[in-house]
Length: 229
Image (tube, rainbow, N blue to C red; front, top):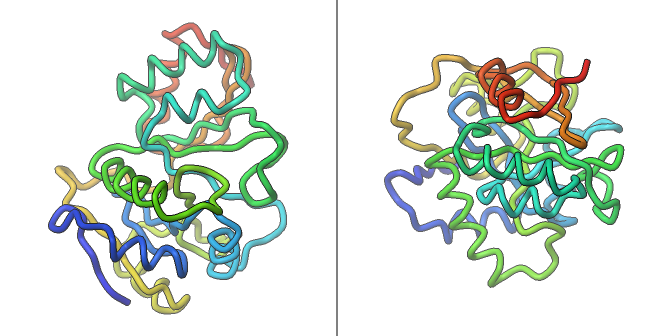
């Protein structure tokens, strides 16, 4: 397994070459993730590495939140409110589960929804660089973004991997060829999977707890969205 640090070398051409072959392992500060292209081969690669169980699907790595929200089938008022919150940085490091057009295939959509991880720096810039190459070189992608999942076997009772040593062991065990890291300004003190919020017409639900869930929830309510459940 090769190691690559985007903070030390922003040339992602080699990363893209690896992605075109198989899923890669990426450190997201709070947790470790498997990342792939949003293509048939990319989905198959994640399925193979994770031994994906039925009823599981993959989310987007969102570097441009306004575009992601615009692609959903949310009503205009909710789109506007979420876009303002997203552009202010409030929603970073959380998953937004949005109503979606059903044309996306199994593995990316579930119960007419698709979810995206709202990225913070420097991961946002890393994904933006790869998206630029993606636009030039790939015509078979289902989405203009990368897709991701937790770095573990599907349904693992131990949950997501938050230790670097465990992530490396997992990568070697599942024959991952590239491990991507960053020099974060501050290493996350709260480890674990990101919270998930699902949305409909100016309402939201917390689908999974996670770091900073309470802060994000408070900002959503302040913006006029009503919590369900």
